[in-house]
Length: 175
Image 1 (cartoon, rainbow, N blue to C red):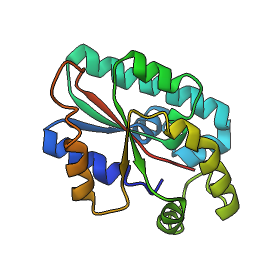
Image 2: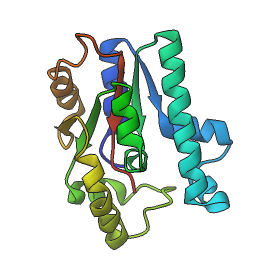
Image 3: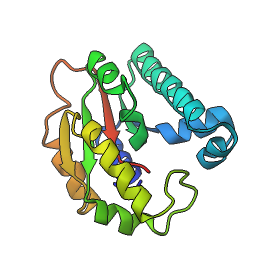
Image 4: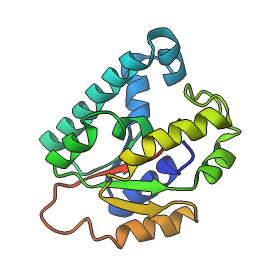
């Protein structure tokens, strides 16, 4: 939340002529509920199970169809046990869209419908808890600047040439 994953992911996918998929959107589509409603009704453990299922479904479909996809994860996705290893085993590069917690807070103060964003103290605590997971990402890109410049920096990583599968996961912190 607030790192720019939708904006940057959409721009990147457009530049590459790939499909953009937001895992949060897939979760809402599959459950028929907003994420905040799902959390309220079923709790975080059920949400994480659905999130893991949708991640596998999206990547499975992309592999079956040989479709190139920019996939934006929720910040909690990559922080779940086994997620970094799963993506690494699939040879999928993960980019951490890094931004200071202060910038995230400034961007998120006006957002609503985020079930784990209650106040500044809990936001900071959650960010600190997830930070070690984010640091496991294959690449770190500062996403505090202009989104088009962030996309240009991602493109300079040269992830789109060579033997890797044509998948890219854009990780973003979310509270």
